[in-house]
Length: 439
Image (tube, rainbow, N blue to C red; front, side, top):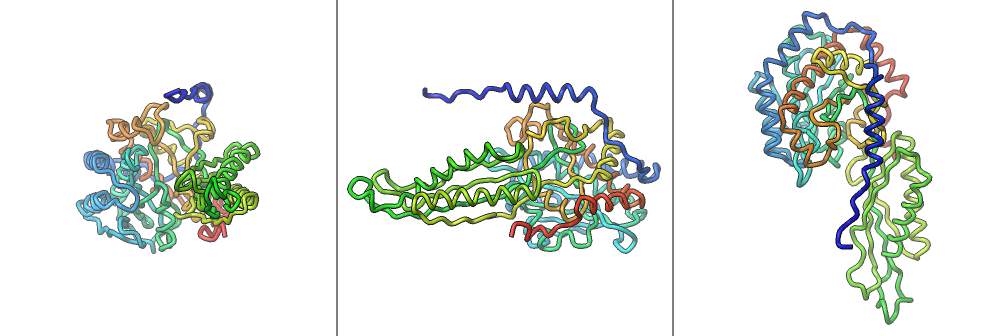
């Protein structure tokens, strides 16, 4: 067999069929709140539409110049230039990250503070296949729309350009350096193949397992060795067997990055790198412990040493969605002719991870998705990279900007909404100490 067997698409097809069935009966997430006065909301929407051409420019420029985690120099400068072009005092390189951007409008002494977040890092080798160029444009447009009515805002809006979401948890780095100090809520939007008010996002940790053995001649004196690759193989198989006992939402994926130098030498060193993902912080913590047990067991069976190094980059938590804010996002998107689907219509099996989860366990937040591609177009594919520069992507950036701006406006203006947002957050468990959670 010179070629791999093509994967059977039957399971994906069954997920698509289920989604189509649920679409027919899907009821939009309601909102019991009035939000901002209609005249002010109309002005904000017009403010977003007034910068539509600049948002298209950002979508295309970022797409044409993709930059990976912590290397987003052109991208950050582009956002900085767009902000200053509109008379905004913006700062580069804040909160300990060279490619971050921050700007503010309004008055924190006059009321609460809400942050609008913008991602702009790309994927290695495939560019903006996660559509972060659209995220950046939508966040920028929302902030500029709110800036156009800054003198009427009963509070403060922060624009925060957040680098290095892909695999590096840049938002956690920013948070540990004070980015969310004094911020009461945070919002952002992500492009996708559906309009979704909410979707499951998994927490994620990175683990490097290093087995140390004793090298020996594999033929003349194998009995004098301790085989580190055997330990890695046992750990790999142990992880595979563990999957049967994991919750359906859990994911563990791993590869062997080192496994010996030559077939005739018993390997003295072997390294596995893995991702562990789970739907709740507590279940991710439990999964972490079980993976450690597998690694230690493999070392014990082979007489090798083992070193466990968690989180080369900060872990990311699952997203805790605020339903009160989500209702206002849905209302804003309905103004744009969209009808975001509620949680559960699109299968939870299609879950990934994002560092916005870490923000959502500090302060209330939402991370809805906006359609820019056909439903079958998966994130992190060349097909989605193409979609991220399409006319649909440009429209998604504008509609997303309006949605974020109106949601932020409602939060600042409507005291009853704000109370509900924070009561819900406390009912969900309140803020946790994210940096020490897995200690």
